[in-house]
Amino acid sequence: MAIFAISDLHLSHSVDKPMDIFGKHWENHATRIAANWDSVVSAEDTVILVGDHSWALRFEMAKPDIEYIAARPGRKILIRGNHDYWWRRESTNRIRSQMPPGIELMHGNGIVVEDVGITGTRGWRVELEDDPDAGDERVMKRELMYLERGLTQIPACVSKKIVALHYPPFNADLEPNAFADLIQKFHVDLVVYGHVHTGYYLEGNVNGIEYKLVSADHVDFTPVRVA
Image (tube, rainbow, N blue to C red; front, side, top):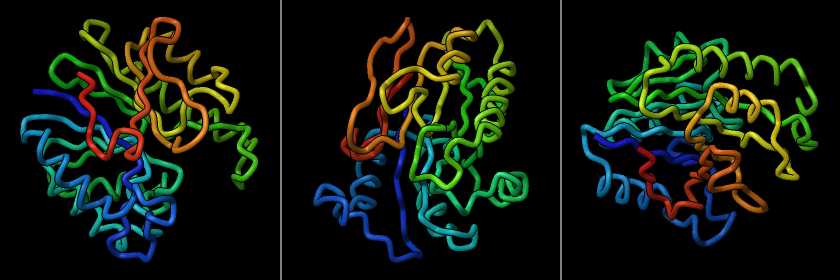
């Protein structure tokens, strides 16, 4: 059994949102992800999907994208991203009940997979000027609460702790934010994050914690093994 991670699939099976407008490397990306995923992930493995799964605006519109994910091998654990409008925070429990077998929504909870503790949430960055909720400390505090709640649900005896955040736990100047402080407090071993497609990012060992950017275009549209 292995654990993989990938983020920002940006699927659009029911909406007109071609990703190749962002570059030729996005051409036929859904087909390429499926082929790569199916070649490296087995049915016994777990894949953490770190947000921005679908461009759909409503859950009903997202179903073809969810079915695409469900058709891939392995147990799938989904984190909410900033573009996942189909997954409203208030509707999490209702949507959970409609997920196909093998797909779990992680939202303020922690789980253990073969002695590895996993938790995660969307995260937040208050300095994002182009976001309509930028600077909203209430959102930041709520996301921090979800992460802390999930971390407290992971037993101390696990062999490894993984946190999945859609937004990276640092600001645009690569300075750690409150999420990084919380991650340090709970002695997390690995942080996987997405959202970043261009510009600066952090990877490798930072203050004793491994950071890994797993946006699909950054990892050649292939799930990356993380445990």
